[in-house]
Length: 416
Image (tube, rainbow, N blue to C red; front, side):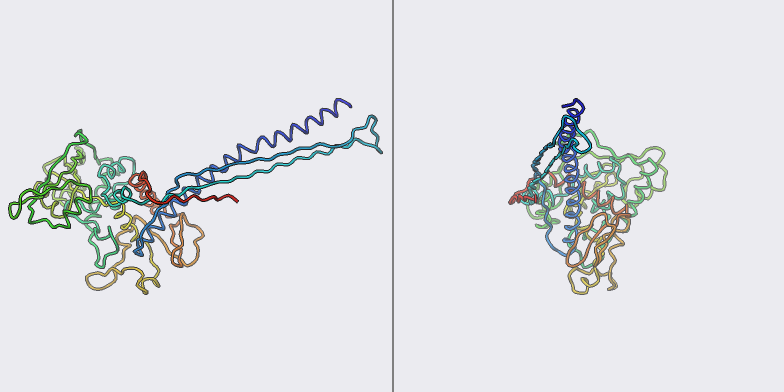
């Protein structure tokens, strides 16, 4: 056999081996990216679906992707057959047949865990940590977006607190709060917003006290549910309710260049702050009556009541454009103005989030889900809504993402 023919055979075998050996890594790379994209997309869809459920007074349910396991199997074969003549001619040429086969199979298994149980409920219902709220501002989020989404009350100014639960029948109050947010945002854009954490010890506590006769059992239970240590001292007219909270040591410091700004003047006016001060403590507020007790010491303090994660989701669920047919059938609550006209919730959520509805599946949606015969979606070009939705996703991951599911584990073999 000639050396050229031997080289031809060896080269053919090498090519077959090379092709087979290169299939594995690209297949793994493609699969890993697909799983990453699928998990991210389904998380967004699940978050949107639960916002829709809340608007229709249905309980939310989250399924955490607990584990993804997959098996790859490869089967390859190669064969060479033919005839090689000592003296080939045009009538009797050499014949060489090459054959190669490669089979690739992937068998993924996904494990889903429902988020439920005591730990999950506490994380969903407990007010978001004030340091997390201000940490979002320091990480680059606009302060007005963070405040409108995550804060329910600041001093005496209300931010549609009724929207932190099922849709209320009466129109909310929110206008002054939005003005405070605009002033803080203006300072932030001009580089004159200084929010910082004091050097207090993490475990330092502060005890708030107010007359027992001012408290209701519901408010005391609410404070307990929110994770505060509550005790009662004495009884009757001399009794007091004592609430122990962490002194978080957060401060708003006004730089010299902002002292005479219109923004600072307006914030001081709305929040009833002492204009002679250049620094104000920021503390976590409690119930309305506790706030009144704290306000006796106010003027140098900003008292903030944050929403719970569930309250934040309820609030953003009002950004849904509910189909008129569903309103007519009474599937959702219709909120009324004092004069009896229908209140438009887009006044509260404008500039934050818009969730559209359509009979037909949207062709250009960032995320969409189907519910009760309609599609609900965020427009791909609506960057404002996508930002707010992304903020909600981050808060959910930080507040509830580490909660362990306490329910059945669902394992799905999703391979073919």
